[in-house]
Image (cartoon, rainbow, N blue to C red; front, side):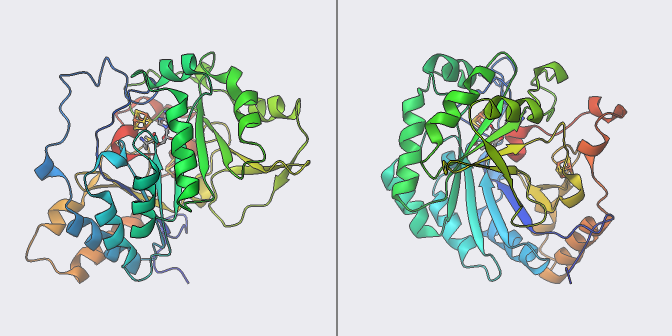
Length: 338
Ligand code: SAM
Ligand code: SF4
Ligand code: SF4
């Protein structure tokens, strides 16, 4: 029996910790330069949850059923001494897996090894194209593809596998890269996941016309290769998985826009300054930092507050997207990390 379920009987399993709101990329769909320019105010250090606060939060969430932690950002590798945090979290009883989503630009062999030794088990590396021209136009800071491919190799060498690669598709920007990316990662053991461009936040100018739907992604791949569906390994798996019939491995499609998966959503997110978001599309967080910094509150009281928060949760934004919910204020992806 789950320890706590929300209004739609969904248990709490996954905790995503965004450890920084800063990033060295300016991906056009996430942190457009016009908004995140030199005048943008990122969080000052004292606003961030400390490693001890994050570890306490993980312990509290573990009491409520969380088993899996994903470290994200902004760019998580920009958080100093990340391996120390990972080590602390890995010692929390009940935590079975620690994974990280990164743009890969700061991942070399040594860093990957240090993180693995600290307790990191898997990484997802984001890469949206295989040609420098397209990739540089997306990351908007001139980072070449080769740097990210080296990061993937470093992660494999450090034993952080199976590696996943996230590719966000935007119409007329990188949809021509579906086949080259698939071809590149076939037979490598790396699982490429195609992600529908989402209307997260309010700064990326999202339009439905920019979304490349899952049906089109699959049809494009099927013109080249025979694919068969793979059954999900656990409830709440967000990617629809397919296997190349010739033994080339697997791909995933995350169709958050055209085939929402809110019914099984068991994720909770904590922002760098300790706001809890029970949905990627929330406009307002719940102030965990205030509770953690309140000396008079013991673990039991904070835990009860978290339990009540999850029990009251009725988010299912993606299922309701077509209603008038799309235009209100929402937290930014670069703040809570996807
Ligand atoms: N900086 C890290 C990275 O890029 O992997 C971690 C944070 S990033 C916000 C997490 C993931 O969200 C990345 O794979 C990124 O491509 C994806 N993402 C960002 N904005 C998105 C959007 N509007 N729609 C879909 N995915 C998005
Ligand atoms: Fe940075 Fe990741 Fe957002 Fe790109 S997707 S701007 S790498 S946080
Ligand atoms: Fe979960 Fe919200 Fe995404 Fe639905 S829209 S899958 S509830 S995060």
